[in-house]
Image 1 (tube, one colour):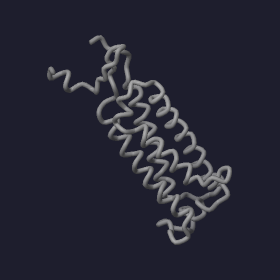
Image 2: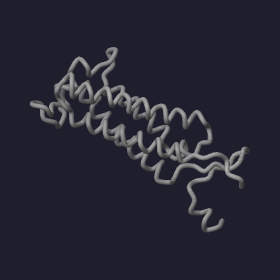
Image 3: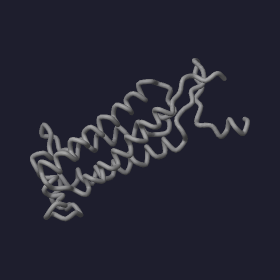
Image 4: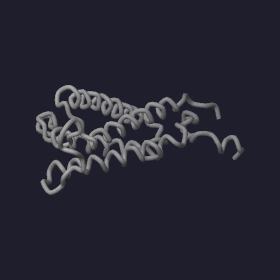
Length: 168
């Protein structure tokens, strides 16, 4: 293998040609962000269902995790938002493993991109709700929002890194 070929972004051979995959940092970054989001979502879900787990966050004033996580808006159709986050990050973790990023199946890339878009759309709704409906911010929720935004950016950039078949 030539030096230039070894340094290129991952190329995946298919019967239709060779696909230039996303840069190598993309799958690693996406997986790290998804696992971090999964960890925070597990913590929020356990805190939701267990009275013995208290959120390490102030519970008075503007920064008030208890107000946010126990509000009427903390559930959608009787499903806790923390559980929705857990489901989101499980899906994005599966779609974020390096093998999924190397996949040439269009549905994998589409599902990952659709998941990231849905996640950031939901984050916009949640941030709006925290700021303008509840007048309170949950630091743990903010961590999830930041991780979701990062995952969205990495997913969009990584998906844009896929190109048409290359002559090879």
